Length: 384
Ligand SMILES: *Cc1c(COP(=O)(O)O)cnc(C)c1O
Image 1 (cartoon, rainbow, N blue to C red):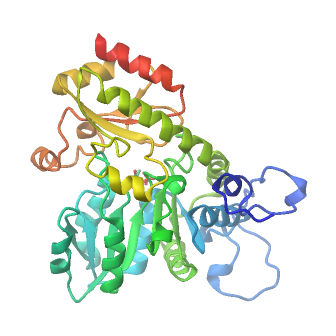
Image 2: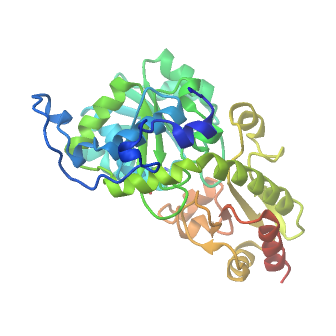
Image 3: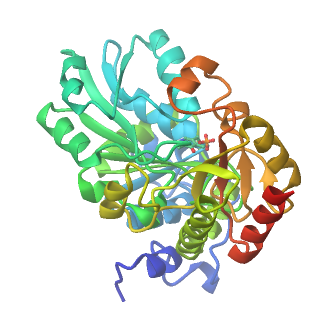
């Protein structure tokens, strides 16, 4: 039975039928190499773990492509391996990239610190000024790079305009879709060429591995796989199996996190100690309309500022009992962090403030605990 529903695809999509040795759960093929069947093909088709083609990779690739609605998918050793390998595969020395100005720290560093050594260059575009994007183009601009939702203010760039701009100027459009996950948004359906994920976050969901994913047309994914074969940022079969298991509950987790995070956002927004909450599910968020139109849910991350500033934020983090004070996101446990001390600590304080990220800003990745317990924990920590 063929289904296009995400719940069914997460469980059955891409699986081997009948399953190997009648095993309902996919076994782990913990083998670096495989016996040749006498074929004399291309190097990249030899069955060898670094070439990302063990049975565990194959199943995962099929499932991920089905979830994101693309022709092909590829898993990588981390989200950064997906990002760096994709850019190095699609660009050659002399090429230029247009990128959104507020990006994941590792991506921003790769574009600014590692690009020059490869003869590559980048210009940063402001999501607020789409009319100025064209002025940044050079004859060697090849690619435009954005994120579906920015971190930690959860801004949503005009994604339809990015796709139209890429088409008008013959650019490859690449989007990091980590925050919404395929449950809330499928950028390929909107026209994006390549979709990237840190599978460390929602796709795995259990805070116990790092992995990445690349989804897109078979031709582009094939090119990126060849580069990955050479750079070596493969995901091993054992971690493939953990990620595969995490994916089966992706839809249940993210839908629950959507609801729980929205409830917490509303509660915090009405709390006397809270100055301001950032969550696209709240009507006062500047990108509420865009997110509501394009996304099926508003995601499991929110950020907020307390009226008491940095000191109040420090006290809150000390007093909360359920959330772990840790960076990262997308797992079953609620995590809380001050971006200025973790994800955005590499950015100069002035620049950080100019981006709207104050030292008192707190980011929460809502897990799958009972919403009532989280709300009660925030209440006790804020009232003390
Ligand atoms: C975490 C993250 C990355 C990097 O992923 P790793 O798995 O840590 O390499 C990239 N983009 C976004 C949006 C992320 O949250």
